[in-house]
Every structure is written in C-alpha cells, then in structure tokens.
Image (cartoon, rainbow, N blue to C red; front, side, top):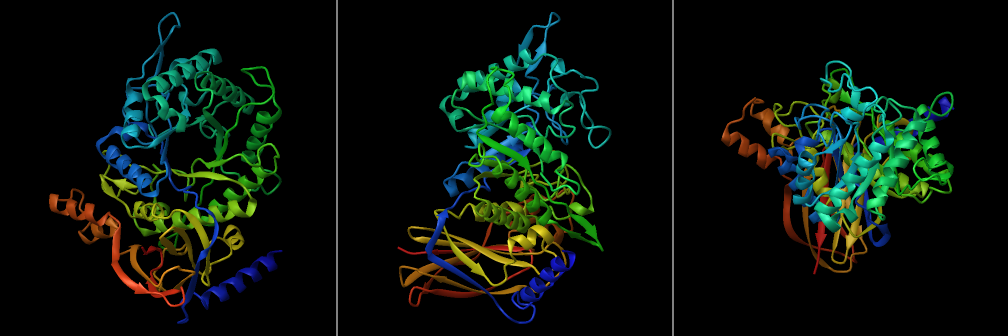
Length: 562
C-alpha cells in the first residue's frame, strides 16, 4: 500500500510538472459554458469568531458591513456565528473571550435576564444585513456546576474555565433559552425565520466538561425551548471537532458525532420523553495543520479536506441523516484564530486567500462525490480590536484594513447561477489531495459559473509550501458561448495585487501608519481589477485568452454580453 501511494504520487508529480509551466508547457483550462453541472451553492458565505463583542466595535461594524455587501453581490445570505453569547461578564472583549451577562440570579435563586449587550451584537448583524447563526452557549456563571475560576486570561493559563461546564439546573437553562428566543423574535420579527440555531461548540473536547449524554440532554432541552417559541426554527449540532480517521478504529470525535446522530434518530428525548430530537443540520469542524519548515510555512489543506470527507462519510452512513444539510461550523487552515507563531505566517498575505479557494472548491467537489448537501463552510475569522497592524491573527481585516483573503471572498461572491463543466490540465485529483495534500506539484485549477449573459471563471495556483516559484502559464478556452462579441475583465489577488500586507511591508511595516499611509493601505486592501472591461471576439462560440498566474494567486475572469 505504501509503494502504491508513493507510485501514485510520483506519477501525479511527473504529470503535473509537465503541465504546470515549469518545463515551459502551458496549463490548459477549458470551460464548457453550455454544460451546466448544477446550481452554484455559495457555501463560502459563512463566517464566525470567538469574540462577539468585537462585532459592534468600530472595526467590527465596518467589516460586518463589508461581509453583508458580499451577500448583496452574490444575491445570497451571509451568516455570522459567534461564541460566548451566554457568557457572564461586562462585555469587554479579549482574545478568545467575550461576554453578554444575559443571566444572573438574585440571592433567592430567581433568574434575572439582561439582553442589553447581546442586543448590540444582533443589532450590528441586522444593520449589516447579516444573518446570525445563534450559538446557544456558554454557561452563565450563576448556572455553572463549576463556576470558579470563570474568566480565563488567554494565552495564559487554562482557557476552559467555569463557562465550559454543564448547568446545575437544566430547567433554568431551558427557561433561559426560551426567554432568549422570545426576546429575539420580539425584537427582530420575521427576520428570525432565516436564522440558524445551534447548541454549544465542540462538546467532544474541553469546551464541554460533561459527558456525551449530558450534552445530548442539553441539546434536547435547548431545541425544545427554541421550538416552543419558534416552531419552524432550524436547529442543529453538535459542532464537534473534525472527524479524522483513527489508527486503531474510529477517533473520539467520530465516536462522539455518531452517538449524537444515534441519539437524534433513536434516543429518548430528555425534554419531551419521545424518541429522537430535531436535527435540521449537522455540524462539525474540519481543520488543517500548517507547519514551519526550513524558514517557511507549509500548509496542509489535505488534512482539512480529509476531515471534511470523513465527516461526510459518517453523515452519509445514516439513512435518517443522509440528506440532512451539513454545516462545516469552522473550516480553517488550523485551529486557533487568536494564536500566533511562525506556522501561522500564512495569515497576512496571499497564501491564506488561495488556501481558502482551494479548500472551498474541493469541499464542493467532495460533496458531489459523496452525494451530500453542504449548506455552508464557516471561515472562523473576523477581526480583533486594539491589536497591532498585521499582528498575525487569523482575521479578515486588521485595524479596518482588509487583508488579501477578503478579496478571495469578493471574487467568490461574483460567482453565481449554474456551475458549468470545467477542466484543467494542471489540476490534481481530489483523492490525491486528501491523501497527500499539495506537496508535490501545485494545484493549478479552475471553476466557473454562468448566468443568462455572463460567465465567471475562478482560477487559482496553490501549493502547501510558501516558497518562490515561477508563475503558471495559462491558456483558457471558454466554449459554448452564444454570441460572437463580449467583454472581458480580470480581477487578481496575489503577492503583488489586492494585498495590503505587501503594501505595509513596502512601507517598512509601520506600527502606526500615518494618515496618508493608512489611506494607501485601505486602497491596497480592495480587490484590484488588473484588466478593465474590453471587447473580445469569439470564434465558433469559443473565447481564448492567455495569462500568467503567480504561485499562491487567485484570479477571476468575467465575460459578459448583451
């Protein structure tokens, strides 16, 4: 088996080396504009963060508005998921921390609800035209079975403090969830019909200091409380960690996910006494595993996609849940947005953006392969207030300056309509990437969509290793076009374009950019159009054009006609 894997890798390496431009050949991309393969699903339009209070900070509001604008471009809803909606505290945000103080108790144990802080969070989303994924957690201090110590001081000490324990009174927890749902319904009206609801986060690890059975009980009580107020609410879970294949049988994450799915299908409901529990979507968290090797970052998108595929296999193995939508509740290159270190050096520049394009496109491909429905893939990245510029956190913007990765989302937002058949001689098979990641040759690939009078082609040149390399030479043929005259324009993100980090480095990496420098950074953070709309002529319904695409680059070619 090892010899076969090595041989396959060698064959793919040699084939790709002869197709990706290293030996002077050209990568040929063919788009069949007249061959639809299904409706395009914008699974990219889901985002999230640990720190809910940053959503209404000055930079958070700006970024939320920009995310909402992506939804306007894509004609699709944008969702935002945050932790700590029930966590006790004064609303101060810090790394991996947030609080709303929705629940306290009087001396006699009577509950006191206060929605003041949480209203700021949901108002910010409403004002930005962003839909919440309402995560019911974490445990208020007054309800925790182990409340002290309560607030952590990340990165110092234990993060999983008193907020991570089960409730001392499940009835009071259920009443809190019911009151919360009723308040949100009364404040936001019919808007709540498009929201998603979920119970807790990663209960298979130390985010939940309880048993799997205690989590099932929490889920039952929470779902019943939400449905009592909002009978049509879409609720799901368990938002467990990534499902990776174990060496000696199923991993603990898979065991947890399976017991939860069994409970929702056949278990006794702790709230209703009936069989099973409502489950409108199934969520788990695939992550990559970057390393720092020989002075550069080496990503591992294969690790992330292996967890995507294994989770899909688990869901598909249950007849009751095979058609249930999947939400990848945190789908990211690695596990900690608030952590720093050389292995996280991908975050500021183009490598983060191209890895998102790679992972998202391959997630679509795996969903088709396994005949499952992926509703969304949550990018666990937002912004951090009161931090230095480009501090190395996993975020979409820094101090109001958009990072390069956000421009990849801007390009994906330009896709829409039907997906059409697309081929690339520089593409690696998805099975190879899941097993070996992108460590031999790069993945030079494309996907395309079509509406009535438009074709959009997304192209990327990805490799795990962040080392210099020659650009790929591309020849793109778009076939099946219905007109002879159309316009073309091109947008680009790479080390030199749509990349505020590169601009910041050229400035000398100022800790406090001047007003003029900040304006330059804001401009550099926008999506750059490298070719303005110009007329081209097709021949027998085929448009042909060439371009160079740098390693770790993403481009979007837009063709329009009247």
